[in-house]
Length: 181
Ligand code: GLN
Image (cartoon, rainbow, N blue to C red; front, side):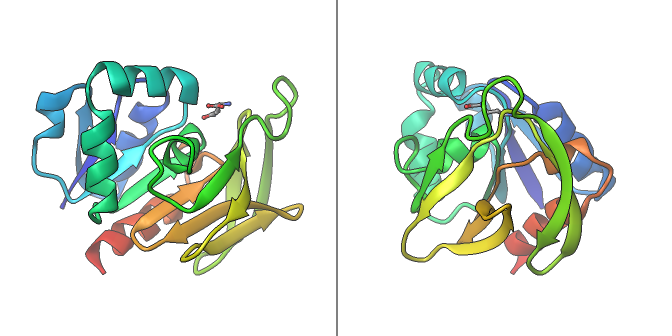
């Protein structure tokens, strides 16, 4: 199994380290040539969704990435990566994300909460979004204070928080198992 990590901007290196811990091969995507390699899954990291949108378009990656996900490429988006999959960005998932939902400056916090199918996990939020609205086919996997912070639709998985910033590898393992299903 080989997982591609979108490395246009943001916290991609941390995802690569998580996959390394799980013994899963990965490679970084910065342009179309990288993109055209064989891959079994894709991770879109946290960062800044406005910058990521600009670069994904500049690199002519917007259409191929969106199409591949719509065609079933298993994809995991964290934080800005969640925003990228919503209905106003790549539009592959029936979710509406609220950006900077916890406030711009003081919106960073740590908590532990339930994630369906895993149990209690550490959750680091950094100027995070949450999911405002879910449509058909979306399964909510976690809520914190009544707001949706993790969801799945088919082979797409999103979290508002950053599982790659903690030692706990269970969310990445969940994604790896999703690919293998
Ligand atoms: N606030 C960022 C955005 O709106 C997301 C923050 C993050 O990915 N840690 O894109």
